[in-house]
Image (cartoon, rainbow, N blue to C red; front, side, top):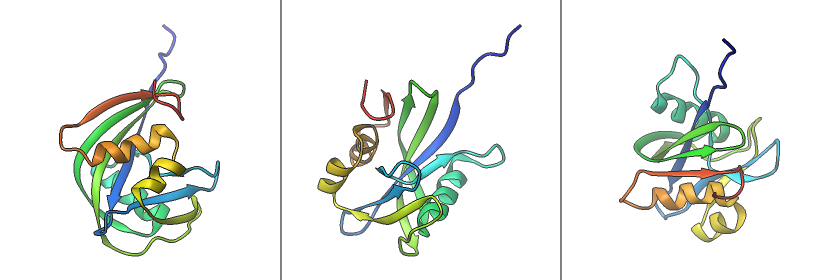
Length: 141
C-alpha cells in the first residue's frame, strides 16, 4: 500500500504587549511579517513548541494562555495551532530566522501581514473561539 500524505503540525504565537501591540517578525526567507511560530518537534508539547519558537525567533520568553484557532494551509498541508500568549521577559531582536522582530500596532498587523496571518492575530483578540480557517498561504479560502 502506498504511503499516505501527511500533515505537518506547527504553532503560532500571538503575543500581546501591555499597550495592545503584537509581537511580529519579518521572516529572513521571504520577507513577510508574521507572528512567530514554527514546526512542533516530536518530543515536545504544543505549549513547549510555542515557547521555544518565540524565544528562537524573537528572544522573548512567553507563557501560552489559550488556544485561539487552527489554520490549515491547503496547498502545503500544514496545520498551525495558534495560542494567545503574554510576554514574561526579553526584548524583540533579530535572529537567524527573523531579519526584524518588533511590536506592531493592530493597524500595522492588518497592513503588513498576509491575510492568512493577520486573521490569527484578530481571532486571538476574540473570546468566542477557537476558530478554524483554511488558507492558501496568503489568502483565506
